[in-house]
Length: 598
Image (cartoon, rainbow, N blue to C red; front, side):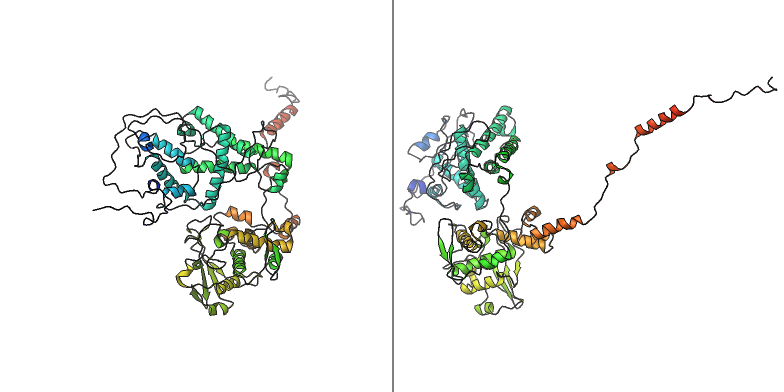
């Protein structure tokens, strides 16, 4: 029988993939030849070198997978990832050692999707969507290529196939962390690779003896390496705010420390525990001292957003239709239209956040991110009408809602609850209120504008702007900032973001007398410390508490202020008594002898 090769279309692949890469080449009638056992271990270099990514050419497989492979020559470090900004950032001289040369930032490459791919997708597509460098993949591939034991991994296809398998494993491991953490890791790797190139060090630190302290000299080297990387990243890091960049202020040392933490986290995911030297915190403290002396303590003060005053919310969400608002600093504008699908969804997102403090990621999607079943869908919104739970209410039921009817929101997943183990079992019960941004009525208006029933609610995002297009983060931010700028001005509007809704509901719960565990449970935090940061006292409550304290008598005496009996004082009193007492026999008249004795 003739065996026909399947085409790329039959295999579900694009014709652009070559047969060698995509795996759609001719069928082999016989199994691949078995590999001969290795004769002996090759002489390994002291520090494994990273292999540059290159396309597989003819003969490369047989040369690198020979029975007795020669030691791999030292190869140069892979080029660093380009930085996000194209501006050169000269180091900040803060009285520290001489500054390092300025960093030349390369232009950012073409945007590529960071979606974690499934296992069945072709390796070529994975490499295109996940550009290098990936030090954990390079380090593992280099280690496996140097393995000369009988248990070595030698897949058919040569080192490129081995790299594809290691890349596939890294793709799966990347999906174990939230998207925001992956983006943080990728950004930290860019700065880390650039710092390693400037100080002339290898990025992948897999010397276990040095990291664990078994090699004392290597351990000191790893400590110095992290300290140098930390300082280099700090000197080449740009502050986040444009005003700070224009004024020549440095970045926060904590931002450079986050780069080190991300690099350590990436190594730990690959089974490598990097050193944690105490010098890092000492360096960070020293930098903060120098920044405080030069720029003042207000520069390093945390800049947290404010809670929404009720008057600001009432004015922002009652702006008349056809009002032109400024969307961003670039000058983009939009016209208010509260009946349009975009504004109906936008109003429902803010109303839900104001009621229970949902995060922006729960009611909208990041720009470019596809909707999947792990996101919050319309099935998370249910209703209790007339005491009966309804999954998909009819328009007639929504128009006839009574004061006791409730909307039910079931949290799906969040940043602090990736799988819904902690909060998904507890629904949020939403009742009608007199608030100007009532959550139940806003959700009912959204349901009426875009009705869905049956299984379609499970496959649609919670909030759409029409034609099943999910509400995006940028739309929420631009519309909210535009409305706030219109009612309070651009300067005051920068004090609020969508996250201010969480601060607002936490502060309201505290003012209403709720205890810390209740605030933590209702706003869905994993620790009470987070609730204590968000739930703030109002200025009136703060001033009243301090003023009322002055009217209370709070005199107190510690034990150290009470009189005590000391042994030395007792001895001194006894000596004084002995000095004042007459000597023995003094002052006593001698008795005359009695006649009998005479």
